[in-house]
Image 1 (cartoon, rainbow over the protein chains, first blue to last red):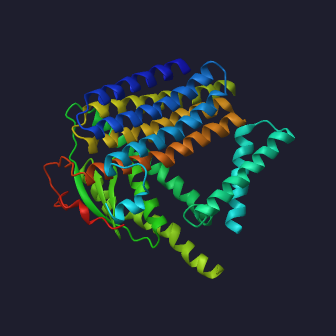
Image 2: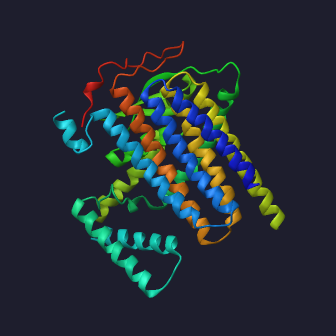
Image 3: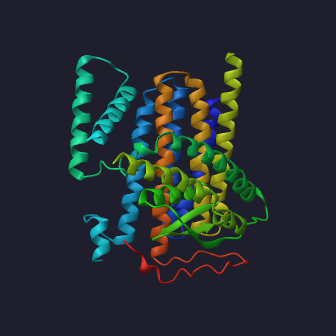
Length: 94
Length: 166
Length: 117
């Protein structure tokens, strides 16, 4: 039964990837890739149960955090065009 | 100081739960890294009521339960709209009043709005939140202020509680 | 008892999968970024929540369940934050949301530079 859920997640991921390829704006792509990353976490967890290796959950945990930080970093770059400075200072003198 | 200790305890608890291997060496390594993280957090000056909001306590839990019900209801509504061949959406941008005192309250309110499918907060200003809704009736739902009152109730009583303590 | 738990876990997994796929369909069908965010938010909340709950039922009272709960908590705290960052970035850059027929007379999305710090 984990297999059915994995299949559904794979369908979801391919649809998200389609949206990432279609665009049209860069924000659509970021949204789709972020959604893709969340589904990856679920896929890792389900795979861990399917193959009976609960260690996979640790990878999923780390992936969830990296996915979030990656999305925030891309958005910061898009909004401010700068990754090296704190947002607080960028808003004071843009 | 009390907050730093409680942060350290929470971190150590999470370490114990995630590690799952209880040998003296690994437990002491965990304790050392928890201490290092608390030290860094203290240096960054983020161990305050925003970085580690333990004072919300049980009230946060009852709020989460209420929010879960709302999320399920909104999910079913949005799913119906997606599956309808006519795609009955009617997007609207509205301003919602946020009556919380602290920035933490604003953040909780804005994130609750975003977490509920059908509404996404776009900008948090002084006391208002700009909300994009997938349908006009959902926008009116947020504007009616039921969620706003609940968030305020959750952190408002906390404010007086904090004043009593200090 | 075991059959009961398996059935419950089945139902949760199927429900979560259904919500995830419906959300992805919405990601394709909706007309602009802001409305697509609602669809993506759907897969992130109930889709992920139900699937992880279904796995938790399988895990029982073990450390595995605790890890699944931690993943769920992380997802529930980070997903609205990144959605807000996305909406805010798109809006600050002047991307206009498509509005419905019944315009509620909201502030026009021009002049986004009045943002207080």
